[in-house]
Structures are given as structure tokens and as C-alpha cells.
Length: 111
Length: 115
Picture 1 (cartoon, each protein chain N blue to C red):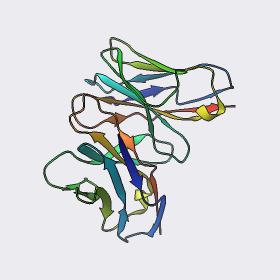
Picture 2 (cartoon, rainbow over the protein chains, first blue to last red):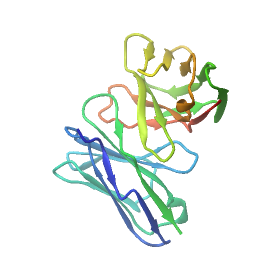
Picture 3 (cartoon, each protein chain N blue to C red):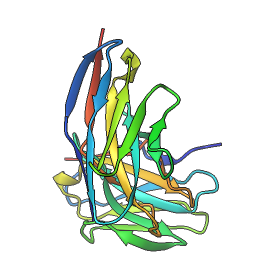
């Protein structure tokens, strides 16, 4: 049983560019959440998708947007990249259970 | 809203020594409690969770945590650590009865086990 898979694992962008990160949830899971983990910090909640709709959003600007597809996979898009967007982006999936499974993350470096 | 405080950013210990990683939380509603572990260059792995019932929960690799409602704490302990326990440990909470599974994390505690 594949767990949560994310792509790409690493990427480098320059300021002002746009990036798309992808996530496939654990089999059977229908809820996908995205977290940003800056260096030396705990993960911060960006938003959560359920039934292809954004269900909850953390304190992140509109430059951060997302999408969930009918197969429950998800994308995170970040526009107009800033140096401060450099971080590990974690995707997490869940289904009714009160715990969450995380992927290995996508490490974004903005130069 | 919830918040989580991990009182120690770094904890160095010697192999086979006991360890306690401290976690306190603040919330206006009841919460579920979790400990996650992150090895270098990896994602988060669930270590253990408290949902209800017995306040002492255990993991398969010898860690345990005790939920103390009066002190709003969920400290993680292990009686004898191994080199392989070296990792970053995150305490997290989520709201009971909420329609989502949003996790609020602490800043993490880096456990370094030395030979």
C-alpha cells in the first residue's frame, strides 16, 4: 500500500516565478492538507481539501492556492515566489480517522 | 484556536539514558494529541496519539506519553534511548469533533543521542 507520495522532491526557483507541487494521498484517503515547514520550525497549516473544495485555510496569502482532483490527488500552487517561500512543503492525507499521514515533502529553494 | 509549546529546542543525551521531551498546549476546546518524529531529510511519521481513554499511550519502539489535562501537557518519555532515536520530535494537537483534521504543531525538539 503506497503511502502519501509527493513530487517533485526538490526544486529550485527564482523570485517572481510560479511553482506547482503535487500530491497523491494514501489509498482510501479523501482529505488532503498542505503544510509549510520552514527551516528549524514546525509545520504550518496552509489549507485542506475535501470533495474538491477548500475546507479550511491557514494564515497564508492568496499567492498560495490549491486544487483537488476527482481521484483525491492535489496540487499546491504558489505564485510570485519570495525568498521566504523557501521551505519543505508537506502533503498529508486522512480519512475519518483522527490521525494524519504525511509524505516525504517537496523541498523548494527560492533564489 | 490552539497553540503548542515545546519547552526545549534541543535535548542531548547519552545512549541508554532516559529522556523526556516536554510539550504543553493551549486550547479553548478539547483536543487530540500527537507526537510525530522527523528523521533528517524525511517527512513526518506518527509516533503515538492520544484520542481518548487511558491517559498513558505507548509506541511500538518504547516511547510513551501521558496526557495530563489539568496541566495541559503531553510529555514524551523513553526509559533508555538508542543512537537511532536521534531525530526531530514534534508535538501536535487537533480539535475534537471538528470537521477537519488540521494539526497545530510545536516548533520541535531535536533529540541527539550520543554514544
